[in-house]
Length: 216
Image (cartoon, rainbow, N blue to C red):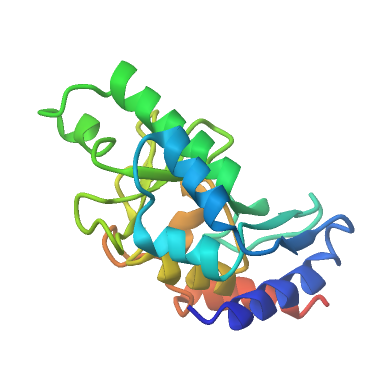
């Protein structure tokens, strides 16, 4: 991915978001060392999918955006559920997300013959969601460069939705729509269907971008 482009997009959004949240921020840490990546793989007893490992090794071991919209901003129809832009791609976060996914799969969604339960299996967690859901890589499709999928633990509408055809696509498109989320109901306005991922050129994305940027 073009990491500099990704960073620049995120920083432009945060500059705009400070109009609504003075504590809005975007942060980037140094690249991960081989030792740090190896330790994560040891803790998980599995190899990290290549696309994610490359991101940590070549770009950053941690990127984070955090912003909460003020209550007085009026969002148009279709965007009313959006209240934040929060995401974290981080070595420790991956450990927590994959541990959470494994726990949900083993304790609550262990029937692989059930269509809902099956979605929790053969995945690799990359991001936790405050409501208990997990964002994961679908390693059943491609171990090296898998799509990104949303896993809901409470019958959420976005359960099983592909939110990025690849990890790089997910991050770039997430940045382009302002980093919204990371709950599924905040993602859904920017998804045309359950298979094509976030669409930064959809009507709602254009509407949201105009709304936030015009208030700078």
